[in-house]
Structure formats: C-alpha cells, structure tokens
Image (cartoon, rainbow, N blue to C red; front, side):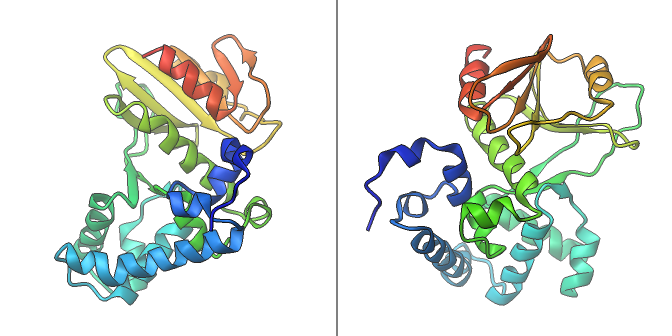
Length: 254
C-alpha cells in the first residue's frame, strides 16, 4: 500500500532517506520501504546480475556492495577491497564496471586542471541511490540516518545525483589537493564552471581554506547545498540554498 500524504514527497530529507525508487518512496511506512529495498538488493544480486551474463556468486557481490556503502563518498581504494574479498585488482575493477554499467555506482573523477597545486588523482565512489545505500547499512528511517556517521557523505551523494541528473552534458569532477583543500563537486561546460559544497546541516560551516580554494578555481558561482528553508548569500558569488532552489538556479544558468 502507498501513503496518501502528498506533502512528504516534497520534503528533500524524506526523499534523501528513501532514495529514488518509486516503490521505496511511496511505501506506506519506513519499515515497508526498507523491506522493499532489501528485497530489491536480493533480487538484483540473485536474478538480475546473472541475466546480464555475469557469473559472480551473489554473496560475493553483496559483500562488495556493502563495502562500497561503507566507503560511500571516499577515495576509491581497489587494493583494499581486493584484500578484504581475497580477489585481484582486475577482479575488483570488473565488479566496479558491473555496478557502474547497471547504474548502481558512480565513480567521480578528480578535477584535471592546470593549477599550481598538487591535486589528488584518485576518484571517489558513490552509491547512486541513497535508499539502497541506507538499506545496505541497515539504516531504516530518518532519525537513524541523522545519527549515523554516513549522514554527511550520504547527503553529498544524494545532492550530486539530483544536480547531475539535470546536467548530463556537463563534465563532473571534484577538487582536492594533497593538503586537503576540497570542493565536493565541480561541473563544467565550455568556459563555464560551477562549484558545489554539500552540508547536511541547517547551519553549514565552511573550512578555513574555502575562500582561497575559490580564488584558485574561479567558478562562475558556488552553492552550499544544505537543508535550509530560504536561500541566502554567504559572500559574493557563494549562495547557501536548499536543493530545490539550487536546481532552479543552476537550470537558469545552463
């Protein structure tokens, strides 16, 4: 059965918690939504992957998927995954290819730019649906999510998917230097460059080096995407806004 309260479907925190699959979003309760997502994971591993022609034990892919969930929003370390699963680096690459091709995982590359900074060269890994992420981590509702260490990275991944869904022809990357200066998402097309930071807080705080990082990158505009009610200007060229306002603003700059 589906919930007949339409207002919650406009709530970004609700959508972030349940993810993007209609059955998960429209379920009448958090427990029904969670159960549907657990069933989806099982079906995907036991039926869908073999139908795609991949002969990998479901239990192995479940362990791999769960490991990816724990590393959501972090640098991809294929060697560590391989050691944990007892398989080779090429095998981990194969597993990642499967998850990418089936739209379950996003590999976000680092920005490659002629900048007088030492930039990291390792990509980040995200599960593309936060509902599946939360199910793999046994997070059943928003209260549990907000108290979980993954909350910040989960919000980041969810916002990235919302933005990139409407900007398919823009190049996406992240910026990080060896000294830790970072911008969560950069999207570019031609000479246009837009920057995004994601904060799962009503009172987002910026790092000390944030202003200097923007001076180096010189984006056309920067957004701090947070669950705030009304957008406001943090400083010239930097807006704090909720995801709905950001998507509208970005759409007008296309």
